[in-house]
Length: 238
Length: 105
Image 1 (tube, each protein chain N blue to C red):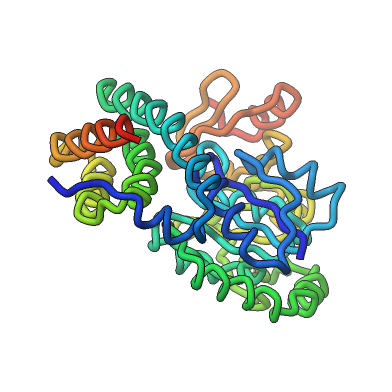
Image 2: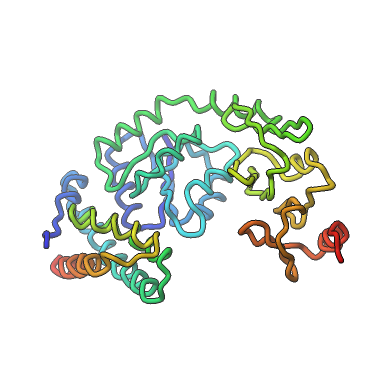
């Protein structure tokens, strides 16, 4: 299996390279100190497996996975066992190794990766491309092959994140494989407005507007110059 | 205070002494930088960022076989995330212990 290693800590990368050298079936193609650097490599090379650190500055392992349309198999490496539950949200995550990693546990994770047929999982996910459907004040989103109901008025912000969108509601946030354009088409235009290429907001939830940004809940959202006139037009200005 | 050791490095090197030396060299190069960033953030009162630094340093604490110290680091990281600085002295003693040990390698 061709693999890459992503970890901001040089010591951790050296250890995983050494562990890989003990497993003859593994071929380390490259290692990266941050996830963004690896994206270009992944677009140009066939990678079967990624050893991915979760806790990295600026761009976490989970952020990285969300940018990948067809992620390869991933084995998470971390010093913190508390993220294990989050890992179950992603079908591409095969195993979860807590540092310092020991060889027997490492070999077990690699064997598990070899036995997992990710193609089946990915194909099923791709078929579920009709990921958002609406009915009245309700929006259904497809997450892990489950249709989850979201009350449209409870949505206050939608943010584009690579191939995914992050839907923020009063109670919970949802990461959905979709585009800002698709969800924008499903939402009532009287309430929702695209204020920036990466953000759609619920204008009823705005707390204040300052220069080129709006405050919604605790989020400060940029407003692009071209979208500002439409936003001002929609507001009930005194 | 517990003594750092190379048990983990020996156990995963499979007797490859070249690798052991290479890994120790990487740790000796990386650890002072991580320690400096920790002090910088701690002294500036950036406790969230300090917690991230402690998180990163935990790996080296465990690599050097410091099991009790690792427990202190976990508790200190949690304190920092709650904006509290309890255990900072204990944690800094761990850093000093590691620094002294690395100079002997």
